[in-house]
Length: 362
Image 1 (cartoon, rainbow, N blue to C red):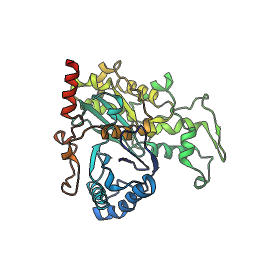
Image 2: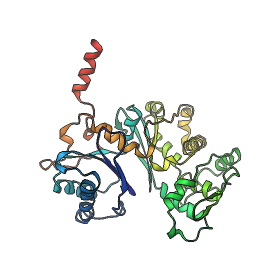
Image 3: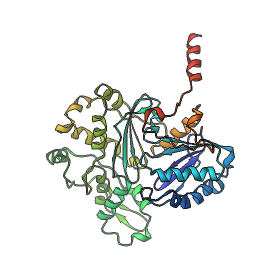
Image 4: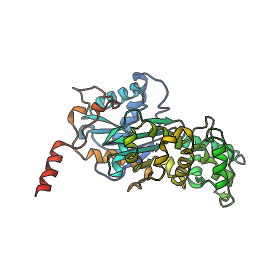
């Protein structure tokens, strides 16, 4: 069984499949809120029972569990998950690092993952299947930021409680490209100050069932991802900050495989705007050492939807032979620290490599 537990949605299914069986509201509260293990257990127990008996309809003793682990999960939350699984008689549990897992969807072992989620965006460079030490970057902007700015710009809407904000944003918001004039204005502002950007006439108002969404709300909400927010944070800046922490001789390989995933990245126009912002930021003195990479940055087109890329990667790994010592069981309840390279799971077994060599000889 493969689980991708997000702040808003959980994706659940079985390894070897190309899509999760079910996507449902997590309803776990804020995963960043400080709670001890016992407090988390009170929330996790009914959550796991719902997954097993109401959603997937499987016997806990029949399948091992793969958890796509957010690097910023509290240890108490992870401990509660482990205890909850063992209480429900799950065979074995393994945590796989979500920050680098989507790399498997690209079919390559080296690259950089940009995961744009609900409350934050995480960037992780990966080399030969291992997260590169020190390259993890996180900024507190995501779909939640888009929602907040959408509500701010859609001032003609009064009764938000009667509307489905998730649906409105998904159906109307677009990430627009910058004009040449706007590029100059952002460059002059040094990319740190918020710059008011004009929504072009090509983006029109949209009439929904209960409300009309203005073009300003449609085209301006996603600016929250690229500097127009309280802290002036920019996803492209986090991307370049991660590259700065990579060894100089590895950067060209890393940027040749940029894996963008997460539901927020599915907003129309996101990829082109991301490249525009990266190109502008490379003109800053801070990123002078990265200027040579400008023509080498390549966004990888995934064969799976971006919002399920993490789960699908867990499914792919679940179909391989994993080192049994990394599974958590009733006799081995240690939670491994994936920030240490030696603790990373052996994804491809030695037997697989030997078989490959024999086939080459034949």
